[in-house]
Amino acid sequence: MRTHPRIAVIGVGNEFRRDDGVGWAVVARLRTRSVRQPGLSGIEPATCDGDPARLIGLWEGADLAVVIDAAHAHPGTPGRVHRLALRDARLSAPPTTSSHGLGLGEAVELARVLGLLPRELVVYAVEGADGEFGAGLSPAVAAAVDRVADAVEDDIARYRRSVTEART
Image (tube, rainbow, N blue to C red; front, side):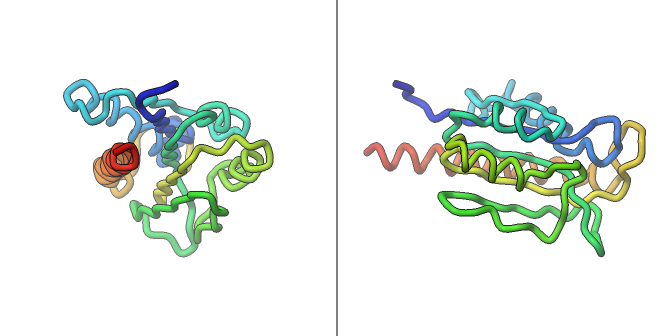
């Protein structure tokens, strides 16, 4: 029996497709912070190319899973962050689409059918400006990395508090 909730943080995308690497950049930032911040201890940071089976494998058995991905919106505002939460409900389609062939929505529905959804799932979708080949984020998306990392930390702290309160 686990005494602490299992928390998975997953950056989705491709770090060699410019803004599509925002999820990877947020995970890298959280890994750096976790060395200095005890509030991030025990999280399981990972990166993924967006394949639904790999995503499900990364969040399987998690109490809380936080997924960060790039998104395309029409019209878009590069760097704008969308937060979507799933708790015993369907993930409604965001006003954006994934930059991958099969999106997060397909992974969520497949996991639901298989009984492999985390207890809570939070998705951060960051609107991108540049999905071309190359390294490095566009300035607007790079500016969103710290904001998203802060928001993920807040979600983790809030979840841990709710678990502690539920136990008392």
